[in-house]
Length: 182
Image (tube, rainbow, N blue to C red):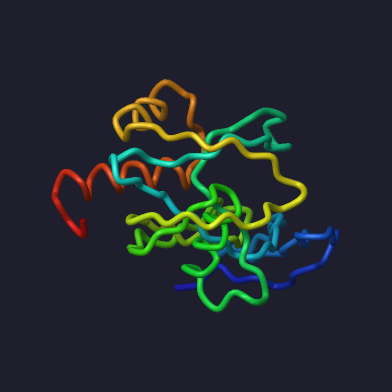
């Protein structure tokens, strides 16, 4: 059986964080198609849960939406980060001023399989300690502490539209209901 294969990858544009390529693909029937491919750094995200079982979310401006979004702390891996978990904890400190003493992996998600190569590793964190770090100068975030049930409802009423946040909240709801980890 003949397989789909990439014939070429041509760099079209390079920005400060991403590179945009045109992929030339040969389909099994011999036709050639052109696809866009965006290369980005991988990232990590973490859902923090406090002692009262509230989740810590951040409200921040996102240029893609030109609006404020509600998300879990997240960011791209820095060259100094050894693991995605390290990235998630660093981002939690920067965005909320808290970090978890217990961290549990949820999984790794491919954010837009047909366009981007960026993967995000998602974690759950409990037993929070306060450690305020200097926030990134380009970030202005508001920390929200919300009961899990309300945060899940925010998915279904459209107030939370971020995929990694949806995954983390629904995973924690599942973990909590089955008394896994915690």
